[in-house]
Length: 105
Image (cartoon, rainbow, N blue to C red; front, side):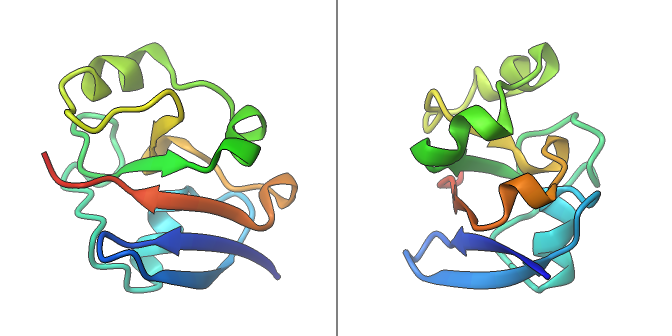
């Protein structure tokens, strides 16, 4: 099984089993990552699943959509590799992907 590495807001890293075709948000919620609120349930209508993708994976994950960019525009913690975890579908190509949960706004 593939792995998703998540750094929580306290700076602790955890390796999660990651099934291709699930979103990063679903993987994190299924595995009990509490820092991901995902208040909208994955409909891309809030930014409570904001993650920052490590630079080495940014190109493979791809750029944020226009809808994501609109929501992330209001975050004080937005970076060039910010994404909404509900909008990134995990694939085997992303095995070992490391994301950091953004601080709450």
